[in-house]
Image (cartoon, rainbow, N blue to C red):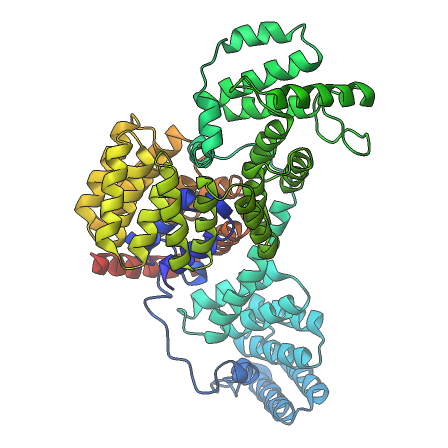
Length: 626
């Protein structure tokens, strides 16, 4: 798959903040499929795919039954066991004829007779009898019985690939997707990835498992914000927010805290807003959110109920407070003053970034009811609409913003992002050129413009945009890092390394993404997995909330076949991810890795040698990439 398409798939969920949070792209671009094409077939599926026989998936039932003819004849044993065994095999052969004639109930009878006749219940031929009966039960839609027969077959022969496939199908039919995936994984490994039923079934079921896990994870409320670097970039994309935070802080956090001890009413809202801005300037976003929430919790709501956690005030007092606050904001005169709509906008933004979408939407709607012309709120709500797959609503909000202020640069920066996510690069370029022309201080607009020019085949102009951005923002680690990513896509790895190094230098070594990118670049240049992991560890040390670092760490541990370490790293990543597609991608890798770990732990004598062979082939494939 085209790694840029894969990046765009993830981008779709990020909305307007996506370009500056393109966390997954680099590993796919630099390291090819090595870090991500693992799935149920480890690293080898993309490099070694067996030819599909004629008929493909349509022959699945035949494929499940093929190869069940009589076992090799055996020497006679004492007590007439050969005669009984031969009778059992003949019953099985008759069952096969019944099956091929679609007489499934009669096939079950014959296979049952074969099982009862067999003198040695542990003989591998008996595993085949159970396996064939399982398939007949499956054709009768008796999936629980099919699963039980496969259990018996696998207990006799734990390397019986078709029994694993049939049990996987039976489990899938009963809604046990995780169990089905475990069986397809076993069949894939045991067959050396040569069994298409296992390969295709595993991929199909894994999608369902990952989707279910992602949806369950999204249903749980988030209580922490994402990485501060991500939040800073998003905030910086709004000129009004940059201007608000550029206002001098007349009092310290300590002074404001002391003043808040006895403050009430309108004075309290002023102090909370002022302290929230102090926290934002210091990138202490959790504390900022706490103060914004406390401010908004003092406002009335249409039904008079408490709608956010925080300070509770009587409805009458809340209405009076809102009226006084609005009057003060409309009077103007203080450039640092925060209106009720702005407080709601800030609160909604942080809740939005935290993944609390319902509460964020409530804040945005409330803000617009107070100030319909609030462009920043319209743009944030458009982003949220887009993340919820309601593109038409997003476009309505963009048009409303243009009607309010057609010269607002933020509109074109964020609408340009929407065009990028939809693959409309020509429209994106028009908007982003406008954004840069109207707001020369927007770092994000320049980054997006440069990357879009590059992906539109205008490499010379793209590099010029980044060179100008570096000159305008010499201390911006974002500009240097994304310029490096552009150079990676252009296969100029030496220049990319210089940019990543520069990003680390200007950030004092605290820009996590540059650490990750340096690690993946090292992997590409010298296949140094240990060095790549060391960079990921550095990224996590400087920013434990950087989900990209955890994802890449998991990928690299998986390449080392450190399944336990990879699972732990994927778990750390899914605890931080907030976007559905990103969660699906991460859970896909996590579940595939966990399934292999479970097999290796439960039966090392079977799967250990297989893993060793995979390790050998993966190492050869990685060496070939250099």
